[in-house]
Each structure stands twice: as structure tokens, then as C-alpha cells.
Image 1 (cartoon, rainbow over the protein chains, first blue to last red):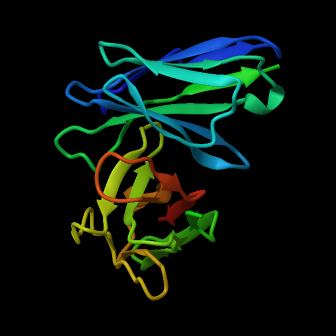
Image 2 (cartoon, rainbow over the protein chains, first blue to last red; image 1 turned 45 degrees about the horizontal axis):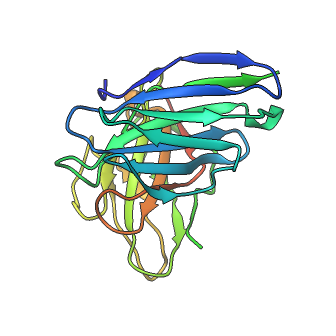
Length: 113
Length: 110
């Protein structure tokens, strides 16, 4: 267990809807990364937050947004959902003592019907 | 553009046989290279990084800058090595996003 928690584990929703995924990093880690894993694209970096501020942006759609709160947990908001957004969404934390290492959560499986 | 290529989706070897999981990368600069592993019903976790030059669980990986490769090797495969292996790079050491390959599933046959 890496200490990173993600909720919910599974989410089934319809096209056009909006969902929020939640991530709590390991104690002491200031960075939160969001990754999307789909069958065709593999694991792709979406966005990184460090101590409440956006640090890096990857292949994140405009319909998606994220934030990191003062207690360092993070939320990824996905709106106007499309079938193609169905994927496994991973959160990872890092930036602690072993700053090169990212610790992954168990993921949230999103199914858009 | 940064890119990591793992040419094999699936690699099956017999127990006791040598293993080599291939990874090639493209990056203009000096990236840091990693191997992450995901065992069945477990989370993705770091296996090793090129800077540390360690052997973890019998696995080693050498960075070849000329061939832009970072292949993962183990001389004698064990059944417990069966897992999904991802090669990844980051721009520089510490607190930066990872670019992943699509992964290779290693199956070790008894």
C-alpha cells in the first residue's frame, strides 16, 4: 500500500454528465499527479499540482480541470463526459524525501455509457 | 517530443530463462529513466531508476545513450516476476511528470 488513496473505486455515468475524482496523497508529499490510462493510449500524464499550485500540464482536455486544496488532497473534475473518456484514472503523489519517486493510488475506473 | 517505446506487449519466458524487456526513448536532453512494475492486484510501483544503478529483485537496467535504450534484464526469471512492466522517463530528477511506454506484460511459465 503506497498510502495514496483514491475515491471512488468505480464510477459509471452517462454521456454529458460531470464527475469528480478525489485523491489524497501520502503524508509529507506535496505533489499530486493525475494520469489517464486507456487501452489505446496507455498511461498519459494529465496535470500536476505542487503545494496547491498548478505545476505542469499534459494532455488534459479543456473539459477536465483539477485543483489541490490546502490539506493537499486533489480533485479531478471531468465534465461533458464522452464515451471516449472511459478509462482508469490514476493519482500519484511525490515531491517528498525521495523526490524522484511517484507513489500511485489504486485508480478510479470510469465508465461512460 | 518525449516518447517511450516498449515494442513487446507480451513476453512469455520459462522459469529460469533470461529475461529482457526492451525500452527505447526519444528525448532531446538528458532524461531520467525508470522502470515501474504492477503485480496482479497491486499498485504501480517503482522498480528501479537508471541513476541508482542498483539491482532490484535481480533486475538491472543500463542506460545506453547512444542507442537511446533502457532495457530491463534478469538472468533467471522467477514465477513471481510475472507482472506488467512500464518504462518511463522524466525531464530531470525530482518532482516532474512521467512519460510512460505502453507496457509489457511478462508471463513466466513454470
